Length: 529
Image 1: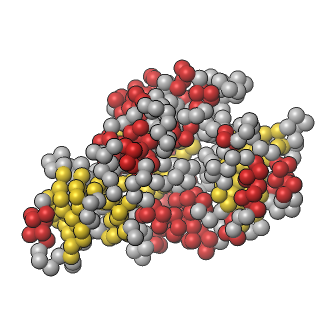
Image 2 (image 1 turned 60 degrees about the vertical axis):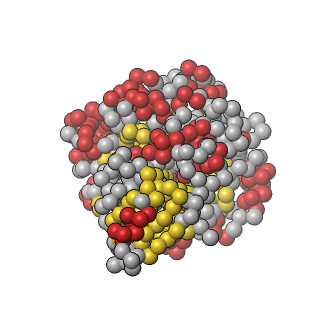
Image 3 (image 1 turned 135 degrees about the vertical axis):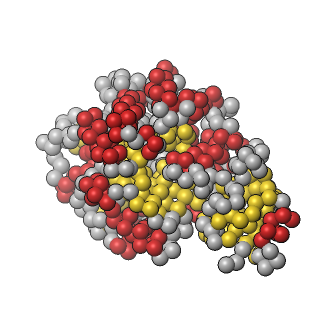
């Protein structure tokens, strides 16, 4: 088996015994030498292939600890509405949507955000009806916790003024009680349920595009937060055929009916695909005011958000999956949801004797100080997304008020309390660009450097801790800390080469940085042209 030697300006190993190196050697997917160039070349032998990465800086493989491959693939192929500045611009983009935007005769789009529009109000179905009177339209909000649909979509789903709000969901209505066309959280299900599923070909094209994109942005692995069975079976086949370019740590979708089959199957380990965890959702998102709060929203006094399942149901599902040997991760945005999740995970882990399964709070976005301390003391994983803070910082205080903001997006506070930070993006809600995540974690600023000094800068992470959050943190959160997250002899040959040093260079350099190469299991899955 051929040995390959990689040379670089600097190799940041994150191995305390040898923090830096100039070369590493790879054979059969493992690192067989790490150190000075002379020593590595000698260990590799004269027949070794040599790859000189020039001025690049190599780091352990970067991993997104909370993402959605299916969603990313879909977002790359349907009408893209991110950044649209008005309803008129959304309609313009829909009019130019590619043929891949259709599932059956339904026009699909994603990424709209009313917070960036004049007035900031939710849109209505009338605008869509005027442009698409007979074509059903289904457009998911940027956070995937609300949908904007037209009258034809409501008609096909049987939603009228007499349709009650479902548990954990809300049908927005006008002054006359008529549905406006915006559905929040569980109310989305009635329309989503009548949209034709993607064809096998569409699913394969979408997943291939998503996996390729991950490799391009330097990701060697992804923790997929809530995977359906159809996608999981396809990835199983690709893994057996050697067609997965990156590692996938899949979390079973524990929200719908498929959870019963996942419970029967139990955890799974393949070559580059694993499923040892389950993902549950307890509340909605802050942007659509679906995040479950203890007290009403500061900008909507009558609203406290939504619980997507009763606390008793959450406890029952958590216990069932823990007893089956699954790590449990629960989506919690609002402070009430986080209180319930932290208390439930701690109690259930103790009752089932599964504290060693490293249970996770997905997002851990807004917490009371006492819940931050409880989460940390229990050493739960805080699976957080740095770019959520920089996307939300323009309006988060209006939603929460200054007092609750103290426990919001509080990464450094969580770390100090003892939580293990596993950083991600939640793509496609955010961009999968991991360099943007490193930048946000260090600066709490947007790409233009605003605000000066960073938003609530006391919660910034140091450069070293930000890098650890995308390497060692996800490795620990997926039980792989002995194989990945560090570059040392005997470990998996997963690493990312960057045009900048993510620790030593100024944080601003990350904005324009690029990925030079991505290596997974010893295979070069991406090389910059």
